[in-house]
Structure formats: C-alpha cells, structure tokens
Length: 106
Image (tube, rainbow, N blue to C red; front, side, top):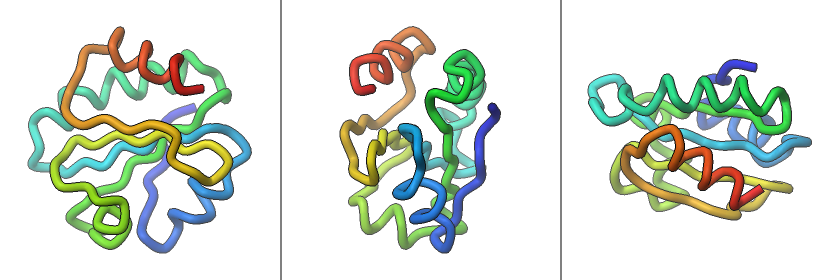
C-alpha cells in the first residue's frame, strides 16, 4: 500500500477513523529532509502490507491540521491508533530508525 494524500478536510476520515494505525507525515515540497525520508516511509508502508497506513499531509496546502497538532517544523511524524496520537517525532531519520520507531509504537 502506498501513501494516501490527506487534507484538512479528509484528516478525520482517513486518519482518526482508520481501522489500522496511521503514520502521518507532515511535509512540504520545498523541504529537503522531507523528500529525503519519503522513499523510506513508502518502503515501510509496503513492508507492513496493510498493517499500517501512511498518510501524507502537505503543510502548505493544509495548515489547519498541522497547527492543531502543534507542528512547528517538518518533517513531523505522528502515529495515530484508534483515533489518538500514540507517538510522534520530528526530523529526518534513516529507514531503520523509522522502522524501529513504528515497531515500538504499534
């Protein structure tokens, strides 16, 4: 499963109401570190094979959701389970570190 583009309008239905844990990537086109971690996140979403969902929120196009969660810098990653934030982290990281973080949360 590849990533799902999520907007302020679809955040609740795609993330908060999801049946599986959701890794939310707050990013922007101009953000180098965001582009750096994107392939690793996509690979991890494929590896988990439907056990998690990867949602990408472009903060330039959808500032309300990012603001409501207190996102001050990007990339910012959140894991939602049963509609609630269970873990979050900021900044780029290697694939192995991202996988370890996801495994520890879900």
